[in-house]
Each structure stands twice: as structure tokens, then as C-alpha cells.
Image (cartoon, rainbow, N blue to C red):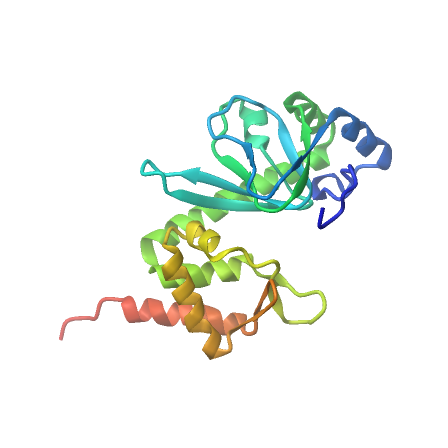
Length: 239
């Protein structure tokens, strides 16, 4: 594995307030499995209630349109988790999950997860906060699909994916940069359109590619580029 290969839940953000003994008890209740890059982890519509914790690697949460087009909903990296909705509401899976790196995943029974929520208020609050973030992000994406052109949506997604660079203050980075096809899938456009939108940014100096990392050299400038494109697309008043 490229990252931590240890079968441990210590790196899972949801559990950072739990003591070591509690984490060890949870680890003992989990099944552990390694997934290869591109391997399917679970299928939309399946009836399992397990919750998955990414110890190392990363997975993409995807869905498919009636025509078979893949739409990437989110990426879960090391330290994150997925599958909690089915454990909470006892409904079939709402999306499929595919490993996008060699990954080590802990699989917790749904009932164990529910017992954890009922006994640890801090964990329950963190799950509720995450679900609120998902709702907000969904609202944002719906608005963007309704009001922004494809190029603007690509730029907005870059802003969303970037995180502060711990090594350089005021610099933001996407590390690792997902494949262009994944970025295109996130914003419901073609790979060609997404690649063209990003290629147009490099000469401006707003972004810079280094290895598998993409640096946002000027976040405010990138936001201004979105606003400018939006103004250019706005209907002109008569007379």
C-alpha cells in the first residue's frame, strides 16, 4: 500500500475523540479487506448495511444515469468513511463505490455502527455534521448545474477540491489531482471539455501542475474567472 498498511482505525477522523481501548474494540468487530485500483467495493441497490472506513488509499462514490453515464458524487480518502446511510435508514445502497487506488478498508457491521452512535454523542454529532455537509454540497451542485456553463463548473470544482498547503501559507493544492475524466464526471460534462477548461487556465498562472499535485496560485483570481464567465453569459438588456 502506498499509505499506512496497518489494520488500524486510529487514523479515521470520526474516531479521533475515542480512547485507544474503544478503538481496539471497534477494530476487532471489523472485517478488513484490500481492494485493487479499479475494483468494485459495493453496488448501488445492494442490501448490505455495513459501514466502510478507508484506512489507506481512496475510493470514488459513483452513480449511473439511465444511459449508463457514470457520475462521480464524491471521493473518500484515507481517514474517511462511507456507507452510513444504509446503516441508519435500513434502505438499499444509493450509490456504487469503486477503489481508485490500492486501498485497505475496514468493514464494520451496521449494527455495530448504530450501537456506536447511541453510546457516543460526539461521534453522532460528527456524523450529523457530515450529512449536513452532503446536503449543502448537493444544493450547491444543483445550483451550479442550473446556472453555470461547463467551464465554470470545472473551475468551481477545482476550488472545492483544493485544500490549504501545509508547507506554503496562503497556497492551496489538490493532491493528488484526480484524472480529468473524474473531474468531468463530478460536474456532468465531457472529459474533453474538462481538459480544455483546465488547459485554458495554465497560461494565466492561476494554476500550476507539479507531478500529481495541482496548485491554485490565486484562488481569488480563479473565483473571479468564474464570475467573469458568468457575466459574459448573462443576457444583455434590450436597447
